[in-house]
Length: 121
Image 1 (cartoon, rainbow, N blue to C red):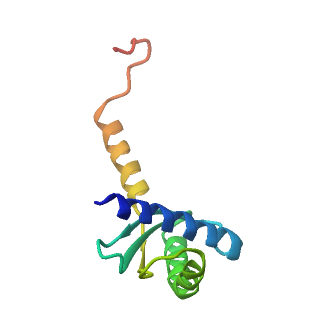
Image 2 (cartoon, rainbow, N blue to C red; image 1 turned 180 degrees about the horizontal axis):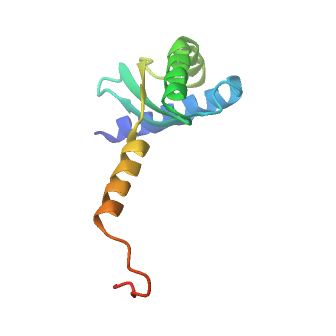
Image 3 (cartoon, rainbow, N blue to C red; image 1 turned 30 degrees about the vertical axis):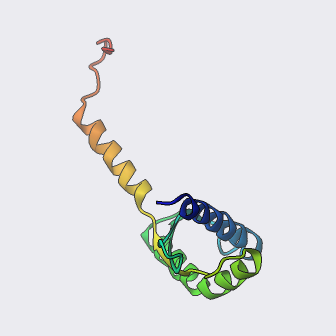
């Protein structure tokens, strides 16, 4: 990945987060933009979002932000100058859920020390 692509990814993530905080405070309180991946030609971008709550809340939040893709893209066009404004695809980021699941599996592999037994280091 080129240095320019990395910088554009970070810029878009920061600006999308700012737009959500400023324009959609009440609706986007449970939504976090975790990562943006722009295609090498800068025409398409995948925006990973994390939504606090259960699976139903995550689906609602993802549906809501997909509905706001047009206004968010328009506002981004006013804030930053790019030759092409990428077309955004909002995707639910499940890395935190996967990480928690892996930690649970690791914890299940190592039995807890018996009472009175000293932990080995």
